Amino acid sequence: MTLKNQELSLRSLYDYLRTAYGDRRLWLAEVAAELDISKREASILTQELGFHRGKALAVVPFEDWRKSEAVGRIFSSMTRGLITQ
Image 1 (cartoon, rainbow, N blue to C red):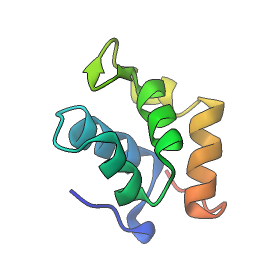
Image 2: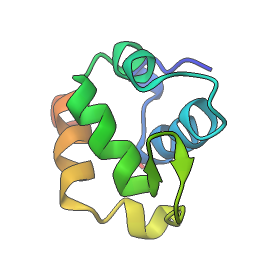
Image 3: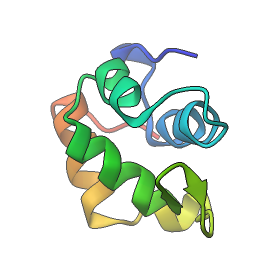
Image 4: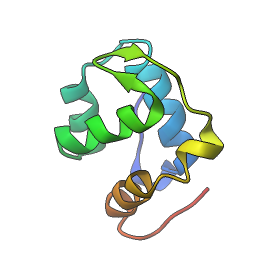
């Protein structure tokens, strides 16, 4: 699964992280490269989702995840301020 900037929304990012990282198809560094963000930002996104070191601790529902200030900041930088949902 890949994401293109024109297809990127908070929902598609959430779904991507759940499948690509949550199912352990990609390593954190690969997620970062795929999304063109730093490994630290990828780590923050996955931790906010409820994963730690590839393990699901308590997966956060989309409605809660999207309200995270860190998620919003990273998503904004990914889309250069053009937020879609």
